[in-house]
Image: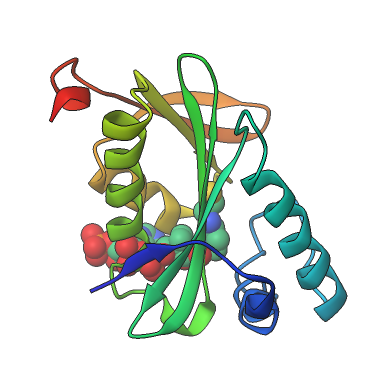
Length: 158
Ligand SMILES: CC(C)(COP(=O)(O)OP(=O)(O)OC[C@H]1O[C@@H](n2cnc3c(N)ncnc32)[C@H](O)[C@@H]1OP(=O)(O)O)[C@@H](O)C(=O)NCCC(=O)NCCS
């Protein structure tokens, strides 16, 4: 069982472990240093208090262990979803469960019509997470495989 929670500045060591070498392999970024993790969390703390949110970032918690991070960048009609799970926590369904929770948040709380996502072409596990979560592959763009998940109008009222 996982839950989503806000991140705090004290999560820096856990966030640094999540953004380790194996997990950033297919991402356009390097593994985090301790300093990267601290400033990344400080930036998110500022964002959380913005009048107009351009980013929602949640920690993925399993039994008081921060195993991953999931982010949603809302736009007026759609939103971009991304997620990362600590390498030693892969394969337990955590990403799929976290995506399900954020999709519910996007449709029910934010009232969005759709969510977009993408992954590196070799990142088959991420593609599997998206397909299991009801996304449709829409092709390739900019070297990435693109997906969209539309919400039925009744989804946002449930
Ligand atoms: C992609 C990632 C988030 C998956 O997290 P996870 O918690 O292990 O995902 P889940 O357990 O929910 O589901 C993984 C699915 O991928 C499948 N999978 C794993 N490795 C695979 C591979 N090499 N090829 C095909 N499918 C694979 C699993 O079997 C599972 O599918 P199943 O339930 O049908 O068996 C995790 O590997 C990760 O953090 N990777 C690095 C960051 C990243 O790539 N983020 C996505 C970019 S937005």
